[in-house]
Length: 142
Image 1 (cartoon, rainbow, N blue to C red):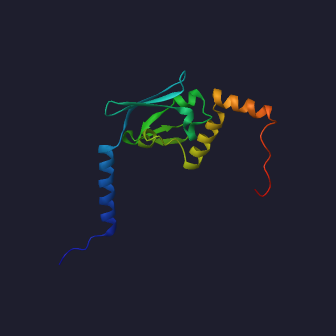
Image 2 (cartoon, one colour):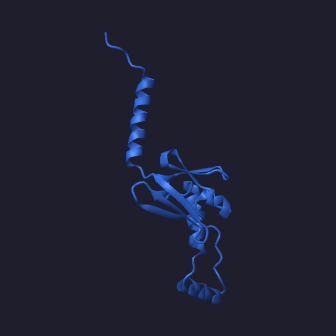
Image 3 (cartoon, rainbow, N blue to C red):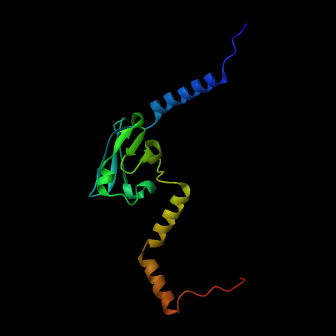
């Protein structure tokens, strides 16, 4: 008679296989540091590459002091960065993929930065618009 397997054992085996694949293929940190003059976090990866990002681009790190940002530890076999004083954990593969916050936060942040951008063309258009009396008023219903 064939032994019936427990579905939980199958789930566990599948999870272990996913974990092993992640450890083999995902970028993992071997060292990390915060550079206060540039405001960048640099991750040295196990494969010999390095990745840097501005700490203030990360949703959960905004408002942190340089001392708090400098207190980083590597956790989770190199897959996570942890800031104990901030109670913040960031997933290294997501950082390398450019994920610095939630989707909603990223959209708002990109729009905010775009609105702050200046260029000679934008300045000239604003001056020209000002000489015409400013932005036209919106017409109700149209």
